[in-house]
Each structure stands twice: as C-alpha cells, then as structure tokens.
Amino acid sequence: MCISAATIDYSTQANIDQVKTTHVHLDWHVDFNRKVISGHVALDLYTLVDHVDKVILDTSYLDIKSVAVNGENAKFHVAERYASLGSALTIHLPQTIEKSGTKICIQVDYSTTEKCTAIQFLEPEQTLGKTHPYLFSQSEPIHGRAMIPCQDSPSVKVTYSAKVTSPLPVVMSALQEGTEEVSDDLKAYFFKQPTSIPSYLIAIAVGNLVGREIGPRSTVWCEPEMVEQAAWEFSDTESFIATGESLLTPYEWGRYDLLVLPPSFPYGGMENPCLTFVTPTLLAGDKSAVAVIAHEIAHSWMGNLVTTNSWKHYWLNEGWTVFIERKILGRLHGEATRQFEALSGLKSLQESVDLFGSDSPKTVLNPDLRGGADPDDFFSKVPYEKGFNFLYHIEKVVGGPSVFEPYMKAYVENFASTSISTEDWKDFLYRYMEKVHGPSMVEKLNTIDFDAWINKPGMPPVDNQFDTTLADACLDLADRWNKARDLENLGQFSPKDVEHFSAGQKIVFLERLTDCEPLPCALISKMDELYQFTPNHNADLRLRWQQVCLMANYEPIYPEVVQFITEQGRMKFVRPLYRLLHQAKNGAQLAIDTYLKHKTFYHPIAAQLIEKDIGLVKA
Image 1 (tube, rainbow, N blue to C red):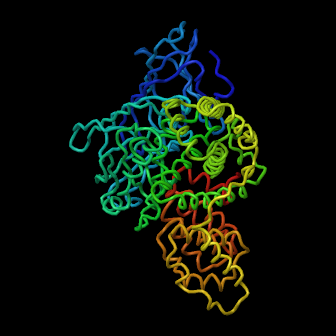
Image 2: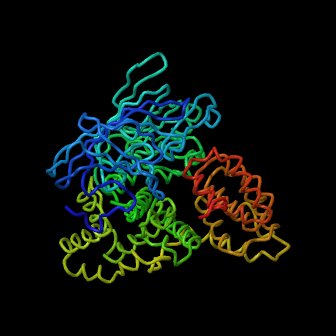
Image 3: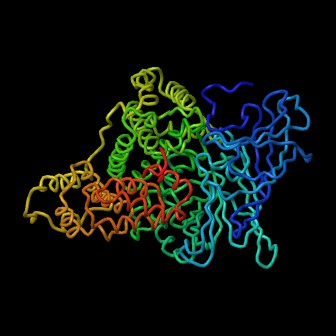
C-alpha cells in the first residue's frame, strides 16, 4: 500500500505508511520535584503492508528506558535529532510480520526530560494561589512526541485511555472515569477518550484545580482564586455549543469543559477535546473577550472531528473554524457582528502578510514543509483568516448561506473521525455541489481560482467586501485623529467619542491608527487622557493601544508594555509587543533585558519564538 503524495506528512518520521496506531494507553506518574512525567505508553497498532520488520515512532527529548512488543523485549534505537522533528525511535520487531492487518501491541517505558517542549512545570509563585506547583501540556503542532513516543501526525487518529498518579488534581482531554487512593499524598486519576483524535490533542493539566458547573454539559476548572470570575465570564458557553449543533451536527464529545490556565499559557485557547484550555487574558470582567470560546467550540467539528492530515493543510482546521465561529456569533448577535469580526480579521491577516512579506512562502495556504521545516515557524493569521476569506468567497459564489450551510453539515458528516487533505476537501465540494445543485453549480465553482487561493503567497486573490455598519464610526474617529496630528487645539475630541463603543469597536479604532503614520506623542497623551485606554483590562485592547504607542516611540507606555508582556505569556500579545519594543526608540535593550529576566515564565514554544523576534537567535 502506497500513501499518495497528497497524504504525506513531512512533519513526522514515523513509518505511517506501514503501521497505524488505533489506541494509546498512558500510565503516568507526575513528579513535581524532578519536573518529569514517567511511566509507560502502550500502543495498539496494525500493519498496513506485508513484511513489516520495524516500527518507527516520533520522539523528542524523551528518556527511553525499554521497549516490549507483544510482551517480548525488543531492540530499539533512538536516532540523532533531525531539524525540528526530534529523534526517530526505531523498534526492531522480534519477528517480521508477514501479513498486512496484523495487530501489534508496543509498550515503551520512558520519562520526559527537562528539555520537554510539550509540558511546562510551574513553580508555586508562578500560579495565582502561590502555594502549589502546576503543569500543563501544549502539543500542537508537533510537540506530542515530546510527551509520548507515538506516530505524531494528524493523519493518525487514536482513542486513548490514561491512569495518572499525582499529588494534585488531574484533568485531561478525555472523560473522567474516577479516582483511586494510592497513598496518603497520591491519587490515581482515570480517563477515557472514546472518540478518535490526533496525538496533538492529547492534553493534561495538574494543579490545585477546582470545578464549577456552568451548563448542562460544561464545568469550568481553574485555581480556586479565580473560579467565580471564570464561571461568570463563561456562563454563555452552552448557547455557543447549541448554536454550533444547529449549524452542523450533534456535539460528539459528551462534555465541553473549560480549563483556565495560569498566565504563561501561550495561546488564546486550545481546542483539546472535552476540555478546552483557555488563557486567563479572556477574563476581562465584561465578557468582551469570550468570542474565543466560540472559536474553540467550533473546533469540536472543524479540526477535532474533521482533521487536517498534515500541517501543510492546517487551514482546513483553522480557516473552517474561524468560518464556523463567525457563523455562531452571527446567529447569536446578528449578521453585522459577523461582518465586523471579518473586517477585524482581515486587518490581522494584512499584518501577518506584512510581517512575512507578500511573496513569502509562509503566506501560502498550503505551505511547503519539506526538509524538516518547523510548523511553529509558520504560525500566523494566514491559515485562519486567508482560510476564512476563501470559504467566505466560495459561499458568495455558490449563492449564499442557503446553499453553503447545508454543504457545511454534509462536509462534517462525510469526513467525521477522519483526516483529510485540501484535495479531499475540494473533491467533496465539487461532488456535493454537483449532486445537490447540478452542473450549473460546477460552472460557478470553476470561476474560482483555486490555485491562487491555495498555492500563491500574499493576500487573498479576491478582496471580499464586508459590511462596515459597526466599523464606520470607529474608522471615522480614527481618521479625525489622523487629520488632527498638526493641530494645537484638540477640543473637538471628548470622552463621549467612545462612550457607546463596544470593546471590539475601540479595538478597530486603534487598528486603523496602526495603519497611519505614527501620531505625535502629544496626541497620544491627550487620547489616553480622554479615552482612558491605558488602565483598560481588555487584553486585545491593551495590545492595540500599546502598539499605537510603541510605533510612535511614546516612552511613557514602556513600563505598561513591560508589565503586560510579563504578566501573561499569550503569543498573540507578547510577540508583537516584544518586536515593537525592540524596534522602538530606547527600547531594544529594554526588550532584551525584560525577556532574559522573565524567560522561565514563558512556555517553551513562546520562548523559542520570542528569541527569534528580538534577534537573540537567528530566525
């Protein structure tokens, strides 16, 4: 059996063309003193071809102690690291397996090491409560291999079970199956994930965790010091899930719980099944940042249920998820809200394209990841927003939501629990549209330049026109400030300018200012006096305000920037602010000194990328 070129995952060293994992069982012990997870993994696999004499697994910075195949000790070899892909673990089977379809069980005894990029151990002082240690994992895209020897490819989907022995409560991306007392200070926690998932969605967190019910199938977990605030902030979670179900298919995963992590978590959210991980930067106090929850819930279908088969096709996860997220927000808050979010997303896409360069391969929807390329280096708004714009354009071409929304549901039904490529997606789009709507619909699809959308760099080949109803007042106000840059009398401005603006509208106002020439420092000072942006608690607004200030070399903001980038580690915020601080007048050394002082606070993934951003290592 040969794997087609469209299915090859260049980000794995496992022999996924010869064997396939179906189930993973984890037996782990959490050791906070040594900062490791140790134990074993049992992999159930079967052969895809005849004459298989070895199994190759992905690993990264793991201490492999022993390997057994069907209960019999086996020889193994851990290779030298290859680029970003880690060290291939080659397991020599005691006997060659002659027939395809033969089942194998491989057990690997191992532990993580201090170089593990998937797990961050936090000291008590790095947590909110300051009393207990904490750990959490983040495996997307290719860090699962730093936590588990496995076929670390999204093309391989597995069910999993786990027994985790720990001195503190444990949660995982699975359904809880109970606990068992091991000793006075240790408990065993049992989990089961019956729906198949890729390895990057196996996740764990351990700490002083408490839960609060926020809906019929949802609990929010976090440290006790923030549980009441989190429960209030995320109380609308069920409405997001129910709206997703009305758009697509019944929710597959049983539970939709939320874990609010300590502030060093590098993402806004991570769609781990049954247990979405979210950043505490969403706790704005006014529910103004909870659209991230709509995004992570949308992943329950797009990414988790229907999964990209390699990181080349990552837009199938994220572009679709943004599209469904905005469908959910549109259903709940009106079409004008969906259009407003699309406008803001387009601005973020332009920033990513500007950062990489309009001809950069990192701005292609299907990037080339051969030669050991690190998928983390391609992380940007491109798969999210270029992917969204692609789907939005297709919806317009085929005739709008009445035609496209039934196709969305059929797409999920057709590909549920599988991993697919862009070619698979396009083939089904054509087959569905022809079957349901006839040859005339195929002619409409043929007017779309699929090659330009998928394979060409830069901004989308079509400039989608979004409704600006909610944006016009923000843009007009920004233009007024831009035109006032040479005026001494600023009496035309007052706090009433923004008193009826939502947090999102204030953000769009600031986004427009980042497109202008930097404002004089006197104007920035006056703006802050009138609009009180500096003390605002919405993290997205803080980002945009501090960007406006840094671009103008407004030095009074520097202490606020340092505070913001050291009190949380979300890459959406810290990376652009570190870059701008490093570029700002009298800011380069401050950026470097700040990072070096707080390096251990950041997640390993974030730390690696910040070092490239501020020139400590070569990009």
